[in-house]
Image (cartoon, rainbow, N blue to C red):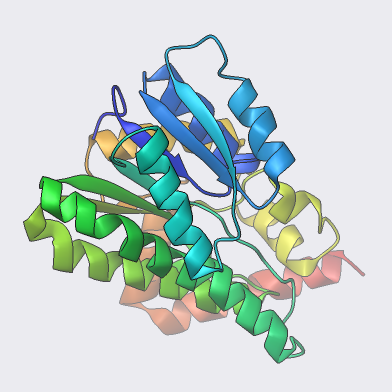
Length: 267
Protein backbone atom coordinates (compact mmCIF):
# COMPACT_ATOMS: atom_id res chain seq x y z
CA UNK A 1 0.00 0.00 0.00
CA UNK A 2 1.39 3.37 -1.06
CA UNK A 3 0.06 6.44 0.82
CA UNK A 4 0.29 8.75 -2.20
CA UNK A 5 -3.15 10.05 -3.12
CA UNK A 6 -4.84 8.16 -0.30
CA UNK A 7 -7.15 9.26 2.52
CA UNK A 8 -5.72 8.29 5.91
CA UNK A 9 -7.28 8.28 9.36
CA UNK A 10 -4.88 8.15 12.31
CA UNK A 11 -5.91 7.93 15.96
CA UNK A 12 -3.55 8.92 18.75
CA UNK A 13 -2.12 11.36 16.20
CA UNK A 14 -1.47 14.32 18.50
CA UNK A 15 2.00 13.15 19.52
CA UNK A 16 4.47 10.29 19.37
CA UNK A 17 4.15 7.60 16.72
CA UNK A 18 0.79 8.92 15.49
CA UNK A 19 2.12 12.43 14.85
CA UNK A 20 5.21 10.99 13.15
CA UNK A 21 2.98 8.95 10.84
CA UNK A 22 0.99 12.07 9.95
CA UNK A 23 4.17 13.86 8.87
CA UNK A 24 5.57 10.82 7.05
CA UNK A 25 2.39 10.08 5.12
CA UNK A 26 2.20 13.74 4.12
CA UNK A 27 5.71 13.51 2.67
CA UNK A 28 4.53 10.46 0.73
CA UNK A 29 1.76 12.58 -0.79
CA UNK A 30 -1.35 11.44 1.07
CA UNK A 31 -4.38 13.32 -0.24
CA UNK A 32 -5.94 13.82 3.17
CA UNK A 33 -5.32 12.87 6.79
CA UNK A 34 -7.76 13.00 9.67
CA UNK A 35 -5.55 13.76 12.68
CA UNK A 36 -7.55 12.28 15.56
CA UNK A 37 -6.66 12.44 19.24
CA UNK A 38 -8.26 12.69 22.68
CA UNK A 39 -6.27 15.93 23.03
CA UNK A 40 -7.90 18.20 20.47
CA UNK A 41 -5.30 20.94 20.86
CA UNK A 42 -2.48 18.49 20.12
CA UNK A 43 -4.34 17.19 17.07
CA UNK A 44 -4.82 20.74 15.81
CA UNK A 45 -1.14 21.56 16.28
CA UNK A 46 -0.06 18.54 14.24
CA UNK A 47 -2.62 19.26 11.51
CA UNK A 48 -1.44 22.86 11.28
CA UNK A 49 2.07 21.64 10.47
CA UNK A 50 0.76 20.48 7.09
CA UNK A 51 -0.69 23.84 6.10
CA UNK A 52 0.52 24.74 2.64
CA UNK A 53 1.36 21.14 1.69
CA UNK A 54 -0.40 18.91 -0.84
CA UNK A 55 -2.02 17.01 2.03
CA UNK A 56 -5.26 18.26 3.52
CA UNK A 57 -5.02 17.63 7.27
CA UNK A 58 -8.04 17.96 9.53
CA UNK A 59 -7.89 17.71 13.34
CA UNK A 60 -10.53 15.71 15.18
CA UNK A 61 -11.14 15.22 18.90
CA UNK A 62 -12.18 11.69 19.85
CA UNK A 63 -12.21 9.21 22.71
CA UNK A 64 -11.56 5.95 20.87
CA UNK A 65 -13.02 3.98 23.79
CA UNK A 66 -16.47 5.34 22.91
CA UNK A 67 -17.93 3.41 19.95
CA UNK A 68 -20.36 6.21 19.05
CA UNK A 69 -17.50 8.70 18.86
CA UNK A 70 -15.52 6.33 16.66
CA UNK A 71 -18.45 5.95 14.25
CA UNK A 72 -18.82 9.73 14.13
CA UNK A 73 -15.08 10.11 13.52
CA UNK A 74 -15.11 7.80 10.50
CA UNK A 75 -18.21 9.52 9.14
CA UNK A 76 -16.50 12.92 9.50
CA UNK A 77 -13.41 11.67 7.70
CA UNK A 78 -15.42 10.31 4.80
CA UNK A 79 -17.62 13.41 4.57
CA UNK A 80 -14.75 15.91 4.65
CA UNK A 81 -11.91 13.99 3.00
CA UNK A 82 -13.41 11.02 1.15
CA UNK A 83 -13.51 7.25 1.69
CA UNK A 84 -10.86 6.05 4.12
CA UNK A 85 -8.17 4.08 2.31
CA UNK A 86 -5.90 3.56 5.32
CA UNK A 87 -7.00 3.32 8.95
CA UNK A 88 -4.17 3.64 11.47
CA UNK A 89 -5.72 2.53 14.76
CA UNK A 90 -2.83 3.87 16.78
CA UNK A 91 -4.11 5.17 20.13
CA UNK A 92 -2.89 3.24 23.14
CA UNK A 93 -2.13 3.61 26.83
CA UNK A 94 -0.16 1.85 29.56
CA UNK A 95 -0.69 1.42 33.28
CA UNK A 96 2.67 0.56 34.83
CA UNK A 97 0.82 -1.83 37.16
CA UNK A 98 0.71 -5.54 37.84
CA UNK A 99 -1.65 -7.58 40.01
CA UNK A 100 -2.39 -4.49 42.05
CA UNK A 101 -4.14 -2.85 39.09
CA UNK A 102 -7.75 -2.06 39.96
CA UNK A 103 -10.62 -3.33 37.79
CA UNK A 104 -11.18 0.15 36.36
CA UNK A 105 -7.55 0.21 35.17
CA UNK A 106 -8.03 -3.09 33.36
CA UNK A 107 -11.31 -1.80 31.91
CA UNK A 108 -9.74 1.40 30.57
CA UNK A 109 -6.78 -0.36 28.96
CA UNK A 110 -9.08 -2.97 27.45
CA UNK A 111 -11.30 -0.21 26.06
CA UNK A 112 -8.44 1.79 24.51
CA UNK A 113 -5.94 -0.94 23.56
CA UNK A 114 -8.41 -3.53 22.27
CA UNK A 115 -11.98 -2.38 21.79
CA UNK A 116 -10.92 0.82 20.03
CA UNK A 117 -9.50 -1.40 17.26
CA UNK A 118 -12.78 -3.30 17.13
CA UNK A 119 -14.91 -0.15 16.96
CA UNK A 120 -12.72 1.35 14.23
CA UNK A 121 -12.79 -1.83 12.15
CA UNK A 122 -16.56 -2.05 12.47
CA UNK A 123 -16.82 1.53 11.21
CA UNK A 124 -14.47 1.36 8.21
CA UNK A 125 -14.68 -2.22 6.97
CA UNK A 126 -18.13 -2.17 5.34
CA UNK A 127 -17.06 0.66 3.05
CA UNK A 128 -13.68 -0.90 2.33
CA UNK A 129 -15.24 -4.25 1.46
CA UNK A 130 -17.82 -2.56 -0.77
CA UNK A 131 -15.03 -0.71 -2.61
CA UNK A 132 -12.97 -3.88 -2.90
CA UNK A 133 -9.94 -2.76 -0.93
CA UNK A 134 -8.43 -0.90 1.97
CA UNK A 135 -5.74 -1.15 4.61
CA UNK A 136 -5.88 -1.33 8.40
CA UNK A 137 -2.80 -0.74 10.54
CA UNK A 138 -3.16 -1.64 14.21
CA UNK A 139 -0.49 -0.24 16.51
CA UNK A 140 0.18 -2.93 19.09
CA UNK A 141 3.63 -3.48 20.61
CA UNK A 142 6.38 -6.03 20.87
CA UNK A 143 4.72 -6.63 24.24
CA UNK A 144 1.87 -8.15 22.25
CA UNK A 145 4.25 -10.79 20.93
CA UNK A 146 6.51 -11.10 23.98
CA UNK A 147 5.67 -9.39 27.28
CA UNK A 148 5.99 -6.09 29.16
CA UNK A 149 7.56 -6.64 32.54
CA UNK A 150 5.89 -4.42 35.13
CA UNK A 151 2.66 -3.85 33.21
CA UNK A 152 0.19 -6.72 33.20
CA UNK A 153 -2.79 -4.87 31.67
CA UNK A 154 -0.62 -3.50 28.86
CA UNK A 155 0.81 -6.95 28.08
CA UNK A 156 -2.56 -8.66 28.01
CA UNK A 157 -4.32 -6.00 25.94
CA UNK A 158 -1.50 -5.74 23.40
CA UNK A 159 -1.60 -9.52 22.91
CA UNK A 160 -5.31 -9.16 22.26
CA UNK A 161 -4.71 -6.33 19.79
CA UNK A 162 -2.31 -8.51 17.77
CA UNK A 163 -4.78 -11.39 17.87
CA UNK A 164 -7.60 -9.20 16.60
CA UNK A 165 -5.46 -7.84 13.77
CA UNK A 166 -4.51 -11.40 12.83
CA UNK A 167 -8.18 -12.40 12.80
CA UNK A 168 -9.03 -9.46 10.56
CA UNK A 169 -6.24 -10.39 8.15
CA UNK A 170 -7.41 -13.98 7.87
CA UNK A 171 -11.09 -13.10 7.61
CA UNK A 172 -11.01 -10.06 5.30
CA UNK A 173 -7.91 -10.72 3.21
CA UNK A 174 -9.98 -12.49 0.54
CA UNK A 175 -12.10 -9.32 0.25
CA UNK A 176 -9.03 -7.26 -0.65
CA UNK A 177 -8.36 -5.85 2.82
CA UNK A 178 -4.74 -5.63 3.93
CA UNK A 179 -4.07 -5.72 7.67
CA UNK A 180 -0.81 -5.01 9.48
CA UNK A 181 0.16 -5.03 13.16
CA UNK A 182 2.83 -2.55 14.20
CA UNK A 183 4.90 -4.02 17.04
CA UNK A 184 7.84 -1.85 18.13
CA UNK A 185 9.83 -2.20 21.32
CA UNK A 186 10.95 0.98 23.04
CA UNK A 187 10.03 4.29 21.39
CA UNK A 188 10.72 7.78 22.77
CA UNK A 189 7.12 8.63 23.57
CA UNK A 190 5.20 9.62 26.68
CA UNK A 191 4.66 5.92 27.42
CA UNK A 192 8.34 5.78 28.38
CA UNK A 193 9.25 9.34 29.33
CA UNK A 194 6.37 9.73 31.79
CA UNK A 195 7.55 6.67 33.75
CA UNK A 196 11.34 6.83 33.59
CA UNK A 197 11.84 5.21 36.99
CA UNK A 198 9.37 2.38 36.43
CA UNK A 199 10.70 -1.16 36.12
CA UNK A 200 9.01 -1.55 32.73
CA UNK A 201 10.81 1.52 31.35
CA UNK A 202 14.19 0.41 32.71
CA UNK A 203 13.69 -3.05 31.18
CA UNK A 204 12.76 -1.56 27.80
CA UNK A 205 15.78 0.75 27.76
CA UNK A 206 18.06 -2.14 28.72
CA UNK A 207 16.61 -4.65 26.26
CA UNK A 208 16.99 -2.79 22.95
CA UNK A 209 17.68 0.53 21.27
CA UNK A 210 14.92 3.04 21.92
CA UNK A 211 13.80 4.48 18.59
CA UNK A 212 12.48 7.90 17.72
CA UNK A 213 8.85 8.01 16.52
CA UNK A 214 10.13 9.06 13.09
CA UNK A 215 12.04 5.78 12.81
CA UNK A 216 8.85 3.89 13.52
CA UNK A 217 6.93 5.89 10.91
CA UNK A 218 9.60 5.04 8.36
CA UNK A 219 9.22 1.35 9.20
CA UNK A 220 5.47 1.70 8.75
CA UNK A 221 5.82 3.12 5.25
CA UNK A 222 8.20 0.33 4.29
CA UNK A 223 6.05 -2.36 5.89
CA UNK A 224 2.85 -1.19 4.23
CA UNK A 225 4.57 -1.05 0.85
CA UNK A 226 5.74 -4.64 1.33
CA UNK A 227 2.27 -5.65 2.59
CA UNK A 228 3.71 -7.32 5.69
CA UNK A 229 1.40 -8.37 8.48
CA UNK A 230 3.96 -7.84 11.23
CA UNK A 231 5.78 -4.52 11.01
CA UNK A 232 8.78 -4.73 13.33
CA UNK A 233 10.80 -1.50 13.63
CA UNK A 234 13.15 -3.48 15.90
CA UNK A 235 14.18 -6.45 13.70
CA UNK A 236 15.47 -8.40 16.71
CA UNK A 237 11.86 -8.89 17.81
CA UNK A 238 11.44 -11.52 15.09
CA UNK A 239 14.34 -13.52 16.55
CA UNK A 240 12.92 -13.19 20.05
CA UNK A 241 9.52 -14.42 18.89
CA UNK A 242 11.12 -17.40 17.16
CA UNK A 243 13.11 -18.20 20.29
CA UNK A 244 10.02 -17.92 22.47
CA UNK A 245 8.05 -20.26 20.18
CA UNK A 246 10.89 -22.78 19.91
CA UNK A 247 11.78 -22.95 23.61
CA UNK A 248 9.38 -20.97 25.82
CA UNK A 249 10.98 -22.23 29.03
CA UNK A 250 14.38 -20.92 27.98
CA UNK A 251 12.84 -17.60 26.92
CA UNK A 252 11.04 -17.18 30.26
CA UNK A 253 14.23 -18.02 32.15
CA UNK A 254 16.10 -15.40 30.13
CA UNK A 255 13.45 -12.79 30.92
CA UNK A 256 13.63 -13.68 34.60
CA UNK A 257 17.40 -13.12 34.56
CA UNK A 258 16.94 -9.77 32.80
CA UNK A 259 14.42 -8.64 35.41
CA UNK A 260 16.68 -9.70 38.26
CA UNK A 261 19.63 -7.82 36.74
CA UNK A 262 17.67 -4.59 36.22
CA UNK A 263 16.12 -4.77 39.70
CA UNK A 264 19.58 -5.27 41.24
CA UNK A 265 20.95 -2.28 39.30
CA UNK A 266 18.09 -0.14 40.62
CA UNK A 267 18.90 -0.83 44.27
